Length: 71
Image (cartoon, rainbow, N blue to C red; front, side, top):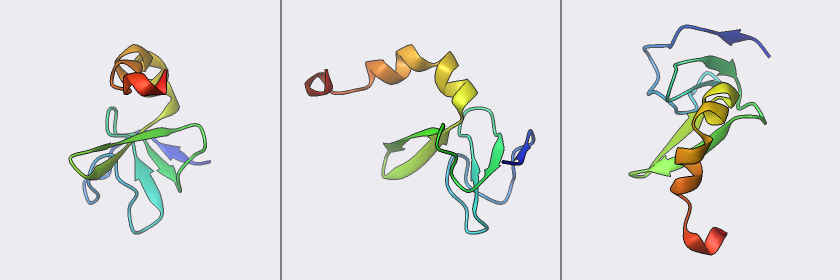
């Protein structure tokens, strides 16, 4: 997977774009397609993708947002 370190200004942060690339909503990393190691959440009706590195760094805050029924 080719990954670019710079965010793409044309697509909304964290959303899968029409050109097949996905942008991390935290750091702006760009990836082709949606990598299997990335996670996503839906906030205010918008899907937000998070790259593997950001997910690992912020795992406690991600887990804290899960419903108690998940556990």
